[in-house]
Image 1 (cartoon, rainbow, N blue to C red):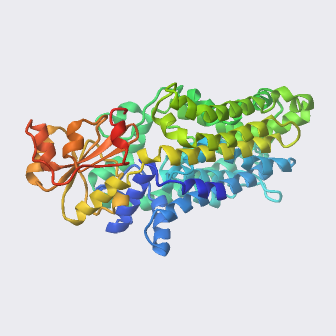
Image 2: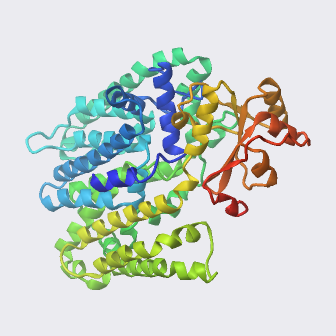
Image 3: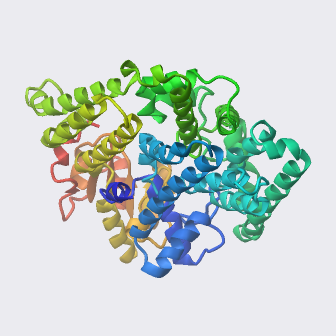
Length: 553
């Protein structure tokens, strides 16, 4: 919890993930849209409202800020660690070591930890997934699942991110007789209870969705009930409907698997343990395979893909890995203690990375290495190199506690990288300069336009109460300038030119490109081939030395 709090408060909310969530929560709060999420003045059909309601609950008590949403995400992440420990205790009652090892493994996944710092829905969805699966597992004095709690967890998951919740829990239930003795002996009650639980969860979703659909209008209702989920599943259904499809080929997750499983993907003993699993498998391992394998296949077949979509399955991977390690220690003690299967590849990698950080200032000063990140990291890299050298040495140690050392090294390494990012590259993601200008402009009743698709990135920081007009093409710019000669237009060019630094109000880097805030009249003149009047104030450039990098993006 301490590491997560330090990491999440080391920089501001990340665009576009966290800023979009905060924008929706702010617009609902500001305009009293408790039933229908809104973004930029329009109903937002992409997500269900539970996370926004939890943010509002904290704002009601503590006031509106980005502090509570970030603390909430850390609390949600900590809840996952508790739930996976309980799940391990239920699934592996004869292996108490599992209840301690599984949380360490879950928090060591580098990608899952970093994404857990985002104010996003998938972290909360993982909690309801684990809670629902916990309801299916047998207790010491009760083998039958807790069907009512199972249905309530499904409903809360549906209210977090919609029907995708069912994909995360349906396979352990459908394949229950393969891993659960009670399900095998009482198939009718198992499937009947599961169907009723799913119906209960669906009723909870409909209790919100039906009134929300009628309140949000025909277009919102159509997207909410039909095209939104279907457009993610089938690419063709999203065409022409402006849906967030994120289409990718079926091998997408397989390609990124080493990154998603890091640092365990670099631990030879883990792969030997997984490859050495043989029948008969104990119920806990059968449970994880019934959960992970069909889920991975289905998520690979679905058109829409993002690396964070299978985030709830990281807990299943941790359980599978911990179970495989326990079996290896029991059945193949020689392999379990073989030094050549230890964490030494990761230790060598950590030392090499530490040496690279140590040499980075000399490489940059000698013009041997240049780039956005090396130039920014060079002033700090020597201090951080010591950490990675120590972590590398820790992973070269032999003896008991190997998994715990790997988990600690993975967590600390990712945390330190996050701090290095905050010191070096965060200025390219910090939208506060532009947000402050836009907030002042709205207070002065100056309309705001945006060239292209606006993702809500300024609404929360600027506390905007009016929509930003999306502009596409020069004609839209001209029309906006004629209607609002005192308005502002935000552009997002890949590179700057002399006019940006001469006539614009503000210029700041954003990711690998730039944000430029223009007086609408000046931008319209330039687009028409006319030189605008000289501005009364020089262009503000953020950060102060950004102008020397203007051609680099």
